[in-house]
Length: 262
Image 1 (cartoon, rainbow, N blue to C red):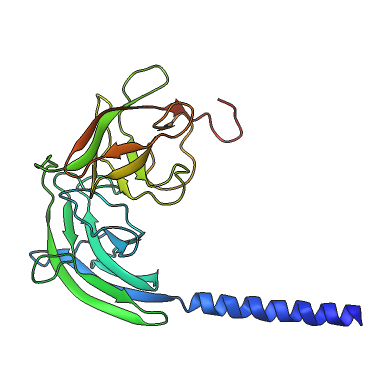
Image 2: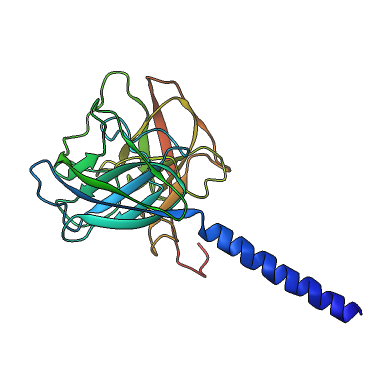
């Protein structure tokens, strides 16, 4: 009898898990569309960004760079078809002038954010099990040089290596929790030869900073720099809205490679 009961319980668990899997599958929908320059030329081979409305502020690349929730490729006609979790999204896209890489736009990149007639970032709703075509958005223009506008909120500082020398080519990410896991909220442009960075933010608050070379997840390359602000443990940087917190120094270590000790 116990064996039979166990069998029934196991069968019930299988059905429950199967039902949960089906329910989870129903939580996604598809967003499609075509993205192009203002003159109608498609953003061939570019990237499209999706920013979930509940995850953070609307994208505003002239003021700050919010890390996208999802990224997908554009085909040769500038089209995309992407499966997304049910929700409301802002949409942006980029076509690089140089190597195709993920990160904030730089001067000369073709860039767009889907906007409404009033010029505000437009939202698109993804419903479970449904497909929505946003049509054609032809508004991409060359991105201008990043400037510090009056009233900019941000964090300014330098990334140095274990030898104390400036580190070039690393991003600085802003997290809301000291664990600094998962997706960060904001990211800086890459550091220059002097190792300096400006991490622009949408508003003031407390932010935990991590510096690394790679934009996405996964371990750094062997010999790559990775570090966090704080000596023995992560330390929050307090920022006031409309002001830039300065003098932040992040000391990075060189990643020895998987399975190796530093």
